[in-house]
Length: 132
Image 1 (tube, helix red, strand yellow):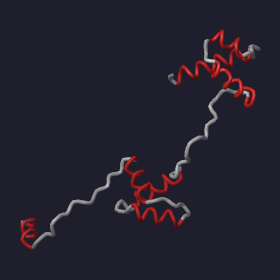
Image 2 (tube, rainbow, N blue to C red):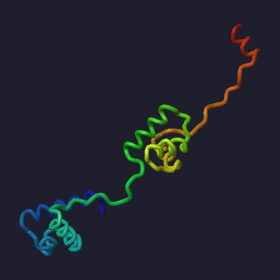
Image 3 (cartoon, rainbow, N blue to C red):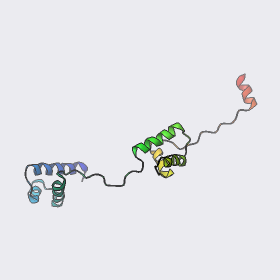
Image 4 (cartoon, rainbow, N blue to C red):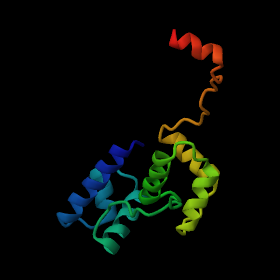
């Protein structure tokens, strides 16, 4: 079942509930929504007065908006910082994160993990050729 059809069911049940139809079998006969769904939504209506999703389920994120901003600032100041050094700086501020979490976050934000290209040192011959 798609999320939009679930939302439509919720709105239909809420509309009929507000019209004074409180009997589950009557709601079922009018809407053809399964009785188990109707009972579930009636319980939500009686407890909360709403059929909306409760929210707040699932594991909270370790990297909040403020921590993400701090990581970006560290990288902007010094683009050669490693994940371990960023983790150490965050630990000083009371935020415990594993360095792998930080590198995954940076990769998701579009930062590339790469080293600068090595360039050979200029010899005296090179310098003379540049002047001429």
